[in-house]
Image (cartoon, rainbow, N blue to C red; front, side):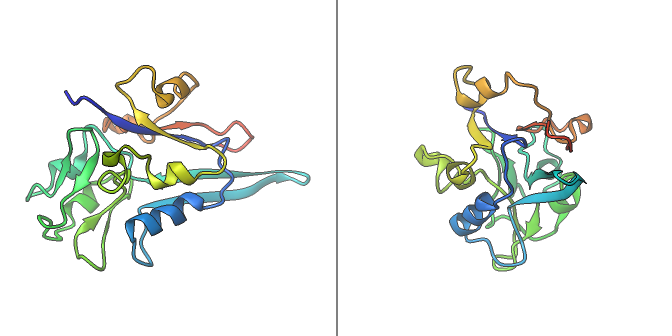
Length: 189
């Protein structure tokens, strides 16, 4: 088992829909126009004036422990590294799109610059490996994103997970490492 097992928690109650995380991701990872590694989807407004609410949902790779994208990759370009982060080796990718079709979260895309599959990697190569937090987490002004080692019971993410959390499409058996604190403001995930 890996020494670390990185995960992320999205608190939909704290998210304000500012898109700072998406902008930071795009800048940090040089994401080309018309594709994204991370997006905050906004649903609303809902309700009756003056009690209107907006729902916010993070859309990105959820870092499955049992990742269908990894098991279908014919070249080994899609893999899970020693810290539990789902990665893509662009040099090994042949652009077959098997991983894109296998992902039940629609979190992968073909990078129009490299021609390889691409997705969120928690900024592993350029930040996490150096001891920094992912760009999205470090920039969030509302504190809606918490990143950390799921194997460390004292980590900030494990402490935050003491609240009620859900995993996106958990019923599929993919074992995502993205946890969500559901919206309590009147809307919902």
